[in-house]
Image 1 (cartoon, rainbow, N blue to C red):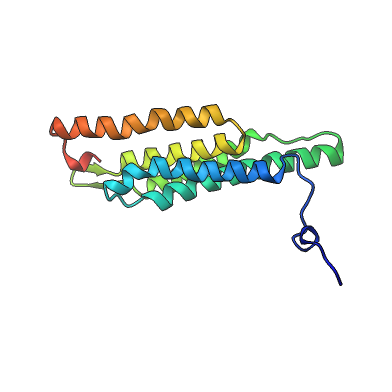
Image 2: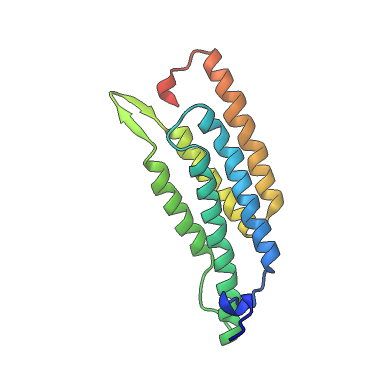
Length: 164
C-alpha cells in the first residue's frame, strides 16, 4: 500500500495551480491583517484575527467558486449558474459579522468603523481570491489612510470616542 501525497489528500486537478491558490490565500490573510491593525491598536472587538479570517474566508469562497464553476462547465459543457451570487453570499456573511460589532446605547453608536473595515477585509479577500491583485492593493492603499489619518484628525478635532 504505497500512496502518494496527492492520492491521500484526494487532490483534484485544478484550474488555478495550487501554488497560485496558496499565494492568493496568503495575500488575503496579509491584507486582512493590515486592515485589522488599526482596529487592533484601538482595542476594538474585531481586530487582527477577525479581519484576517474574514479576508481569508472570502478568498477561499472565491477560489472554490471559480474552481467549481470550471469543473461543472467541463463536465456538462455549460453552466447554468451565476458566480456573482458568491459575492452576494460573502457580502451577506461579512455584513452579519460586522453587524455584531455595532452597538447602540443611549443615542451613541459604536462599531461602525469596525464593521466597515470588516466589510473591506471581505472585499479584499474576494479580490485576492479572484486574482485581482491590483484591486486588492488599491483597497488596502485607500483603507489605511482612511482609518489612520482620519482617525488622528477626528481625535484632534475632539470627535467623541463613541463614534468609533
